[in-house]
Image (cartoon, rainbow, N blue to C red; front, side, top):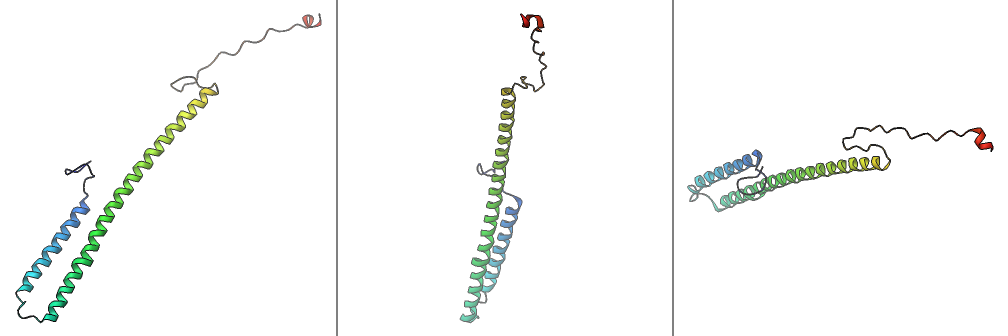
Length: 138
């Protein structure tokens, strides 16, 4: 199941919701910034510095942390899914090899000679001719 943009996996709903939340946060911060620009002439420089630092801290620390955590979480899920698929494929190959080895050992031991796995009945080996006591004495 590839995405429309390339050969990669399709994006999950969690990533889409995360992007929507980030867009909402950026939109709200833009509205707050626009409302703050009207009060720019009356504010003291120390108040402006505090607001700038708080805005920077929110934008850089919190939003960066959220975006890194979302990217790392999606990468971890993708890697875990790939490793599970590889492990499952490897165990399937191991089981096939074990079955082939068991069949080869049965053939080597003279057991089952059929392809379908049904046992064949072989006739008993011929008995040696009886020896008479007279022929042995003479």
